[in-house]
Structures are given as C-alpha cells and as structure tokens.
Image (cartoon, rainbow, N blue to C red; front, side):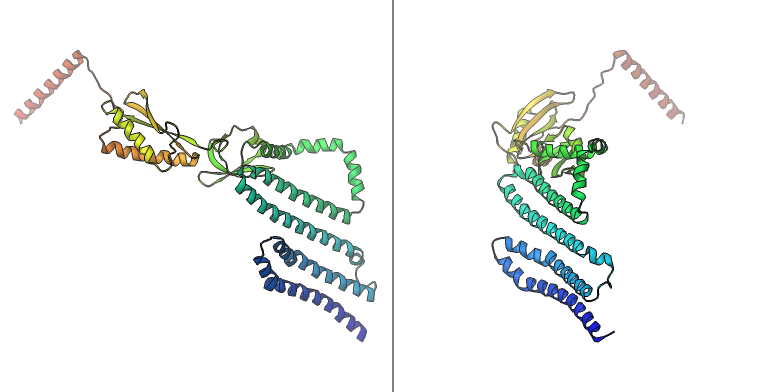
Length: 375
C-alpha cells in the first residue's frame, strides 16, 4: 500500500468525521444560542426552523458527508466499491432527501394547524371537529405525495404503469371495494359525521346505554370516554346508524327531576316547600322561569309521589345535583317530621275466622294450664 493510498483513506475518513463533527456542532450551537433566542420571540416560525435544523437537517448533513466520501473513493479507485452502491447512490440520496422533506413539511403543518385549532376552539368550540378532520386530511395528503415521489424515484416508470393500471382496473377496483367495504364505509361515515356534526369533540352523549364524552373523531372510528374513565371505540359506520342522545347540542342545560314519596299522614305543603328550598340553596341550580318547583304526581299505594323539577348547566352537573338533592331532602324531611313511607299491609279478617282463632287460643291456654297443674 503506497503513501497515496493511505492519504486517500485518511481523506475519506476525514470527510466522514467532518460531516459528523459539523452535525454535532450544529446541534450544540442551536441548543446554546439559537433555541434561547427563538424562545424569546413572539412568532413561532423561528421555533419551527430550530426544530427542523436540529433533526432532519442534521441527519441530511451526515448522509451528505457519507455520499461525498463514497464518491471520492470511487473516483480515486474505480471498481473497488460494489456496483449497486455506485448505481443507487443518487437514488438513495434522493429518497432520503424526500423522506426528510416530507417529515419536515408534515411537522410544520402539524404544529401550525395544532396551534391554530386551539385558537379556533377558544373562539368557536363548535368548529373543532371539522378542523381536526381537515388537519388529518392534509397530513395524510402530504404523506401520500411523499410516498408517491419516493416510489417514482425508485421505480422511474411507475407513474405510467399506475396510470395504465388505473384506466383498466375497473373490475379490480370493484373487487377491492367489496373486500374493504367496511373500511371505506367507516371513512365515509367519519366524513359524514364531521360535516353534519351530530356529535362534536367534547360533547356529552349517550350511546348504546353508556354515557360519556366524545374525545376524538377520526376517519375510521370515534373515541368516547365513558363515565368510569374507560374508552369506548366505535367504528364510524356503526355510529352513523346508531341512535345517539347528545346532551350538548343546541342547549346543553338539563332538567333535573327528583321523585320522592311521603306518607299520607305527612304535611304535603310543608314537604313541597322543603324540596323547593333545598333546590334553591344548591349552588348548581339555575333559577330559570318558574323553576325550581314541586308538584304532586300521583297517589301511590304507600304514599303520595312528589316531583321536584330544577335545571342544571349540563348533564354531568345534573347527575351530581340529583344525588345532592336526594341527600339534602332526606335530611330536611327527618328534621321536620316528614315521613318517607315504606310498603304497608293492613289485614282485615273475617269474623268467623277470628272466632275460630279465638277458640283455638282458648284451647291452647287450657292445655297449658292443665300441664302446669299436673306438674
């Protein structure tokens, strides 16, 4: 091995090491100076640029150094590297550049739209679901474009093949459509839910007998956080055909009915006044119209049924308010002598049966007395 050969090896190694050193130095410089400056500015553009330079651009610098080193070696010593490395070097570099560009674009769009959606939600919460769908569609579109460019770089004639295939693939499209009809149905149902908006992110809903809050609506499924903190994941095609009770649509306020029975001997007017006073003192009660009020519902078998009707700001508040009112009403009834009845039965016996029972009791008494006198 000659001195020139050793020198070429050193140059190749220096190119690789230099690219790594430049990348590491760039990261340190950004963390020490640029990131601090960007954090003090009001705009987010410099923050995005900082994140881009720290990640994808650093990787690209290292890969670019590797490509230069390989090209230098191949120029000095042709035929020493495998042919597939030389032939595919440009392809690999282009593919990596496209992947990095795709990730950068998706990252910028994702962060920008995420922040814009938060601002829109604060101003108009009803538009959250629509903008989340648009956000996802844009990200998917960026990835599809990036994947298409990568495939055309790897297979240059792929576009023509795809176009020819698309023209004559009507039958295959039908077969694929039938095979993936559930997935396609979920996608269209998700778009329909987003456009028509029977439910929105954050809505309180009742689905399949379960109460919960809509956490997310994706193109394929909807996630609902039910009352015990479990997540119910429902395919959109099923949800689109389901009867849904939406407690947040239009007017989120809820009526709060509380049913109580009192005995027939209790003071009705006093009981109804106590119930109304308890509701008025509750911090979550909304005094709208003639609410809260109490009325007689029916004369039941064991007592008189009363209904207290009030209003709360939403369904979760109404649920907790019902429990609070029942507890306070019971305490007030006990303190004021209002009886909450339990089932009672009054037995009226026939006179003949009563006489027979009396004779049997007398016979038993005589037998007992006789036994005692014998002892």
